[in-house]
Image (tube, rainbow, N blue to C red; front, top):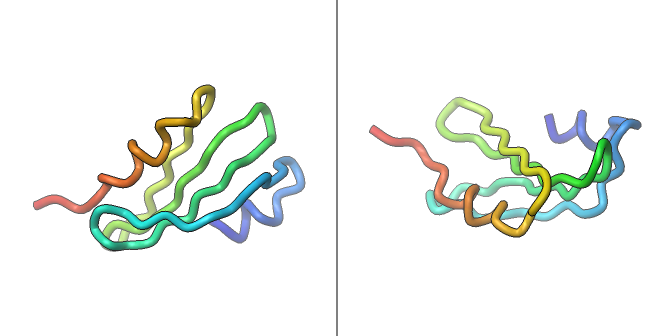
Length: 72
């Protein structure tokens, strides 16, 4: 999915960085300009891809994303 975002001509990646989740896993964080400005965080939890998209106020994006982890 990250490769698709990078090659998508409809969106302009303003910044790309890594983010360490509470579980210790690494996530990719994109700051994107497309149909408005947004942040996208991609990570794996177990064998599932988790995608968190934030629009509008991007300030709380990391605080929302970092605690994501597998339960049970």
